[in-house]
Length: 230
Image (cartoon, rainbow, N blue to C red; front, side, top):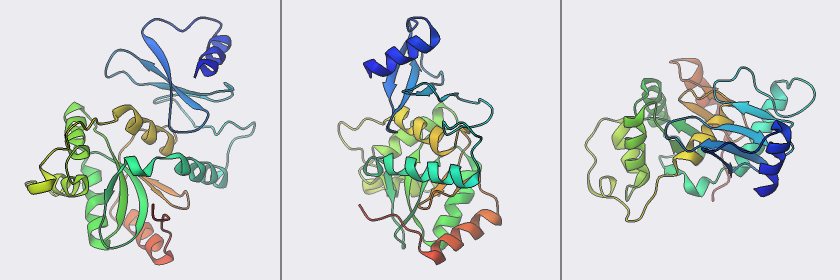
């Protein structure tokens, strides 16, 4: 991390400003420039400074010299998936093996459409829960720290009362908000728009409509594009 900070300071020609810190992300070689003030977005850079990005910045690069094509982006996204700590995400088990990583929020109406599709197909997913607003983040934190996070998420998205292990909390649990936000930024290739669905082959869907997205989910299930069980 010290080397990454030094590279950042060399590239900017100035010491790191007060009120900011450099932290590693879960993605190898990629770091976050985080503000100490709560609620402000991070910026990101690679350790060689050939790649930098801000939240809501235009375009997306994988750090190469030429603009990436669709296959380049899918391959890059598949590589990033390998770095996602699936064991630290919420496992929402239904009938199938795990088919996707989803970045989703309880205060997102399109995420509820996604949940209906997942329930209809019985698709199991790894969930990175976040929020569109602070209330959504608070509800995601409750889900993440529930005794049974998967059941708590299904209850929250089904607008049903959580009972038993879905309502109880795990003592000492801390919701990793920064990590969850980072995952959405990288898997969404700079677009922090919920939901983001990334399948095991690196293909992805941002948003969830009523026709094309469910059709793609059914196609992935028919092809048995599952994550290896961990």
